[in-house]
Image 1 (cartoon, rainbow, N blue to C red):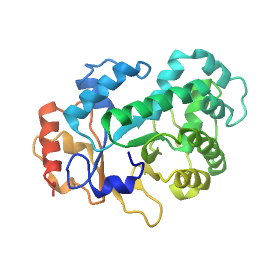
Image 2 (image 1 turned 120 degrees about the horizontal axis):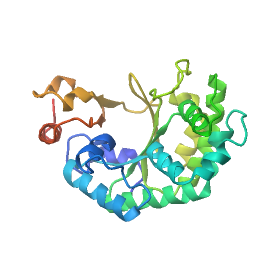
Image 3 (image 1 turned 30 degrees about the horizontal axis):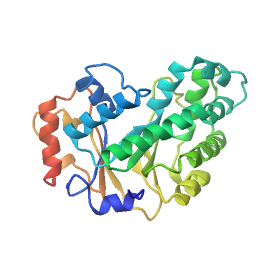
Amino acid sequence: MTTSLSALLEAAPSGRPRPLLLDHGDYATAVIRQGQPVPWHDLAALTGHQGQVHALLDPDATWLDVGAFYAAHLDAHPDLVDAMGERTRTGYALRTLLADQDAIDALVRTGRTLAQAAHRPLVVRLPAPGRWLVRAHAVAGTPLTEVDADRADTASLYIAEWLGKLGDLAVGLVLLDARAGAGDPDDMPVEVPGDYSALRNIVGHFEWSLALRDDTGVQVPDGVEPIGVLPESFWLSEVADESVVPEGVAVLATIPADARPEVVLDRLALLGSGGR
């Protein structure tokens, strides 16, 4: 299987005119799992869950939510949470989290199994460096009062080192999510993919692609074709609004948990026919 996003863009596995990169976590939890959590640490059950998702939604890539994976890992390993909080200095919590070899091994097994089962490359979604730094400290009980660009850049070095241990995975895209979450400070620095040379270097070494999602859309490095973001309203309206289908070489979409299954299937058919 190729690990290149460019190869995926040349021909979407689903046959759609443009690949659909689908964040289905909330919707699949609500509809397929009936509110039960995704079984991140039961690989057989997780593979079965993904099989249902792909049979229903037919995304063009395998979505690997690193934030959700690590949240489940920390729930199962409170000793790691304790270790993250042993020092208060900035970055210690995140560096300790990312150095945990058991988590890395489990993540690699998970990513490899899911990609092979679906025969589609991975979109690895993870918090942007500044966001992940803040959240790791919050989990560890050593919250940060300030996050500036320098601290976010230092966090990117830890993340780049961690990404280097995932090199065997069939990754098409590393997607940094810079959008705010619950408990994030309001004064976060603006994050753009061009700021993080260490991340760009490791991603380039593996011939993966890198992008950053913020509240305005998906930011890609200079010279890379844009990825369009489909608004969540597309999946909720009773009448399809084709005018909101974005331009771009691929479409990134999040299906809301409260979307009606029959409406979702109708919208997927519209995207499969070319949308606008």
